[in-house]
Image (tube, rainbow, N blue to C red):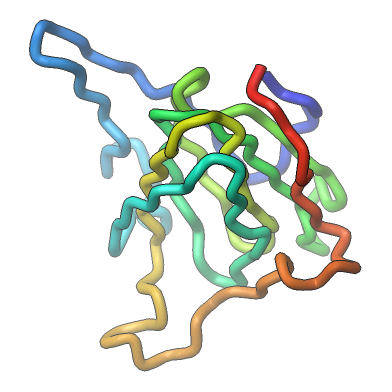
Length: 164
C-alpha cells in the first residue's frame, strides 16, 4: 500500500525475498555487492516498536539509513524530502512496510523519516547505517535533527491509524 506514489530521489525500496523451508525462513537484508561503497553499513541494530508507538520523525545531515522492515507487525513509514538541491524537494511518501510488505528502504541524508507500528503486535526494524552513532567511540555529536517533539513541525505522524 502506498498512499502517495511520488518517488523521492535517492530513496530505494527493495522487496525482501524469503526462502522458506520446514525450519522457518531466511532473507538477505543487504549484500555489499548490491550497494555503492558510500552505502556500505558500518554498524547495525535491531529495534522493537510496540503497537501504536511512533519513532521519529527525524533526519540526518550525513548518515544514510538502510532499514529492513520484515515483521512481525506492520508499520506506516513516512518520508519527506527536505533537500534543497533535490528534484523531488517537498515530496512526501507514506507506505505500509513490515509483515504485509517486507522490504529494505534506503533513506539518504536530508530525507525526514519516521514510522509507526499500526498492528496489534510488536514490530521489529533492522537498521544498518553508513555512519557510526555518535562517531568513533561515541565521542562526536549525534547526526540527528529531531522533529517529533515540535507540535508545529510540518513533519507529523498520524496519531490514529489502523492496519488494513
